[in-house]
Length: 128
Image 1 (cartoon, helix red, strand yellow):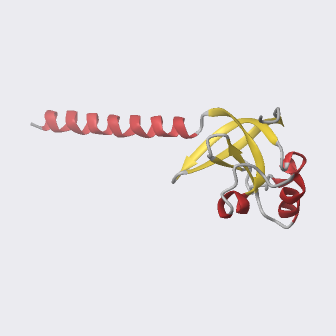
Image 2 (cartoon, one colour):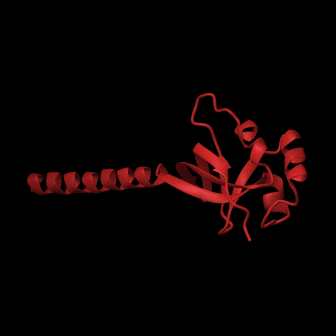
């Protein structure tokens, strides 16, 4: 009787730990994202598919609005730092504001949001 309970407890614990490891691995996988760099407020409030202009994106970023990457499928990726304390990523993205980029890095998902620790970023070809 005790042996059955121990076996059941061990099996349950193994399943839970395995699930946690699987979820953890999925949240920290490396990806490549292609899309526009634009100000986060416009991405949400104006439902833009691309920035109005580079000048507009720069103006909003200089005023303090975080820049995000809007992928071709409409997903929004929040560029984040992986240091403590975290460092804002606007400075790194300013030269790409209003343009298209290819960003490679580690993806973090939480509550439906996508965050990206950018390891490499470069200008992408203009979308036709």
